[in-house]
Length: 222
Image (cartoon, rainbow, N blue to C red; front, side, top):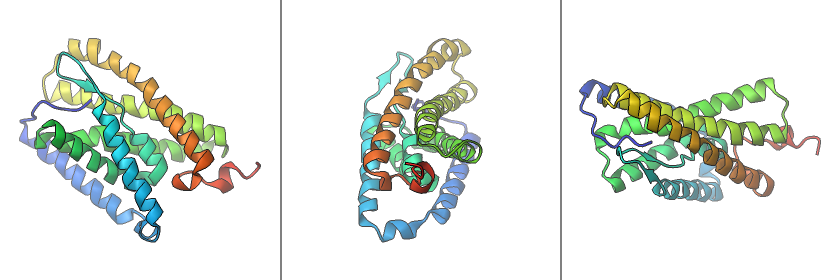
């Protein structure tokens, strides 16, 4: 889902970087840094999660058209660390991935927006909606937020990349509809399963590592 072909439209590049800077600045200001500062264990978990997501990105499938697909881990980062730290983490992952694979720096902001910001914001909005309108239930948290929403977030991220490929990089609609979007559907299931399995293990054995899981909500009757 990476945008590897050089983007040459200056307006798109500048606009994407402005959105990146403003969004990251907003996340940095609102992030609960006090919680991380006084908990060295949380720092280690956060850094370890960033490394693991980066390693997952290394495993990817390449199409003959130059497109590639890999798991995102954006929903997992959002559920574990909340949206502020997830946005910062994905900025690091995308930067490392771009550097190691020779992806043009002009594409960095758009790649971060598509593969980081969009799925994270979608995941957080859906979590808020579920918390507001559905019962605070352990199984609802796991199956809706960790499985279903994670899968949808991957498809949403890929769809944004597809829009950039079509409108900015002039990829044909035939290629997008016949090769790219059908492959995205196949990505949804492993993204959902992997995120759901990891979150299930964490909330059972290490619930303190999951910022969006609250014992008083999900385990009050157990």
